[in-house]
Image (cartoon, rainbow, N blue to C red; front, side, top):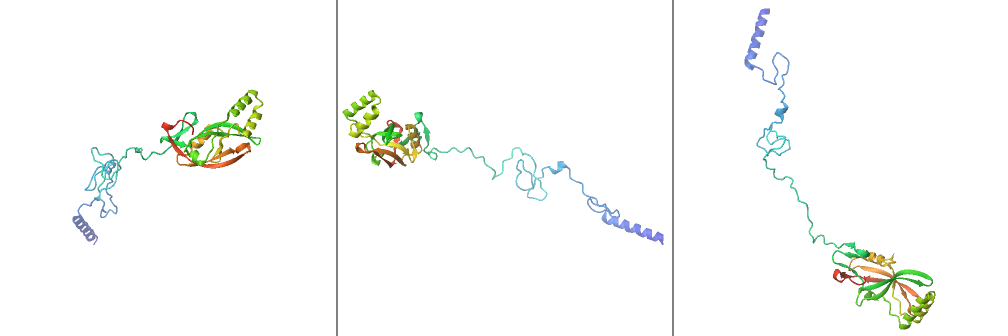
Length: 264
């Protein structure tokens, strides 16, 4: 009985081996109870180039092709053309002169400021730094000496100084020679009108105090032709009867480099 069982088992095993043949890699070997795994690919095989029918390889990029199992090569491909749709290098932008023809002001020698566009603000006056006494108080500013005809200053109504008479010139000279009499002589001659009429004294531009010609030029440098500025002036009253303070709007004109002589 036992010999029959052994013979039957041997026959079954022989029949199974005949049907299955040798066990394939990755499949279970009958009667062993163990799984035999497929051998792992070596690192060299993992980075080998096996391109399919997909897109051409891009230098320096790794990834998958369009066909299953295809691998893109890591590293550069000599002689390969860059794929369409890549990044183009844009040359440095050179701005056109038209797009950058913005007017800028830069300082010139002597504190005068002008525009690079060839024009600077123009008022049409000549001024002189003065220290005058109004009602016992000293005022420092720029007295307008002359006003150009048909200038922005003339249209705004600014007043320049009028010329002194012969008596006024003699009195001023005598006052200067006598020293202490200057303070006495000048007010008397002003009261009589012999020294002529004083011009408007500019003491502020757009409510910013100005005391010197450099202050005045810097104030104008912040503007451009066509702007409107407001000058605060002290205007003497006729006959030496005091003064009044006015704020006068002046619409600035333009003066080009070729005509840059004279006053502001």
